[in-house]
Length: 327
Image (tube, rainbow, N blue to C red):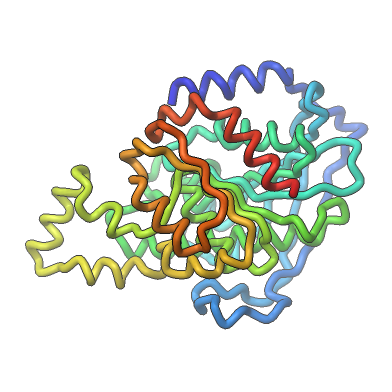
């Protein structure tokens, strides 16, 4: 992880981010529509977008002069209202390649405990290669996390976790709708790119969103129970669960709505790139293999690394991702 942070810092310093001139770059306010298209019969009802018109605010943040990239902040309301006001607004950063009339674009999603440097580095790199990036904060992440609160997206409270993932998927689908209605975005090349936890939620979101044609699963997979039920770190909560009469099948059924493997066949109609580590103990290789098989055995790149030592292959992976999204 330290290596990843150092790489991120190097890339950011190399771009020498400068503040935008407020007299040149103006704030943009407007609205966009969601839920206007018929839902696929393959999309579960909990992930249906209700018809709505959402107001958004796009503000200039800074420039990356070496990369010819302009960065903006984007906010719009979430379709789900929670007891936490901070979490009811979707926050994102929009990385725009300069001097291009149209470009492919992708939503970018962060890792579990990220400080956002990794996703910002990915977004900066891809935008410098002519790919627009919308780094979207998942539910209860970044500015969506209530101050002085322990509430998180992932929680021992399974009902809370399921609801937070549902909200995040709907927020991502709304973000895709926003991109789709931009004049500078190539609507035939819309993607979702995620790392670790972000890749699993990204894959799930892509399965539910027909407008997404390209998907990148970086250090992720599917089959949550098969991957984690016998994992050493899950031993104590698993034993407690079984002590009260819980079974493996109950967990499979309970988590099926948020497991990317459940509807992985929906990815067969999209272009999927998986990047996985053969020695990954955080997301076991069996999970990457399971998703690869059920989604049509598409492009997969294996590295001889673990979850964190994947940082040594970071720029090689970024090059593959850029090629995939620009196809």
